[in-house]
Image (cartoon, rainbow, N blue to C red; front, side):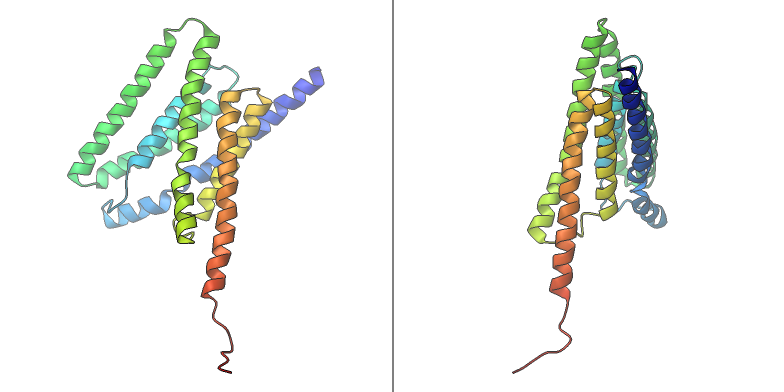
Length: 233
């Protein structure tokens, strides 16, 4: 029994480390966008909302992984701490180069995110019973993750409708799948449904995206391929 527990503990840590490595790929994926923003000194038609939402998600999950909520989920806290820093940098860059109306809107949303996070932290600390506190914050974290993983459904619908993978970058889909799978395993080995349930959904959606990417990229290649010899017979 002790040996089995040790194996699960090692497997959990391996899955967590793998999740951190793959998460870096996910966090770095907007770099090309912000290189363009910095080069052109304008945010053009890009939206800052995904970075605002990603920051809120990272903060909620960070709080769930903290020792004050769930002491056995330190890797959830660390990976989301890194993610929160990345998203904050992206938001600051967006605000720097955005037009005045967008700038004020983003500043307002950023303050709202921090205000909401403070309410969650302060409110949860009022709950003296640790299991109940973990359950409530876990449900918030789970809901946040599921809604974030559900967002690619719009892209999936667009890919099927247009039969084009132009708006579904392969490496972003791959990174999402790998991160979700890693933390799905991490949650399983840690017996934590608030981690493995939403990440399991994310892993399934990641598989769907990858299957669609390979299918429709092949279809578009076949459709664009011209015959070497044209017969008029």
